[in-house]
Length: 85
Image (cartoon, rainbow, N blue to C red):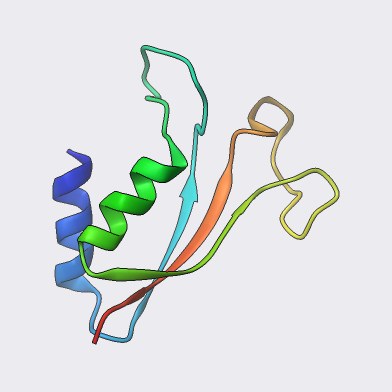
């Protein structure tokens, strides 16, 4: 379903528009839901749908985005992607 989601984002976001993502859970566990994400897989998926990465960073305690609730700390990434022209 992730491929269908990426394709849909490409359809609804106009060229030059932005897609903001919160990736969770970035983890190495099996099973789910929620189903684990790998940052490199997400990057490949979104860029193959016509987006360019402009920002991708782990949410870190004390960092720019440090508002994670305790059970999610260390397992979230924020990304911003630009839709290709």
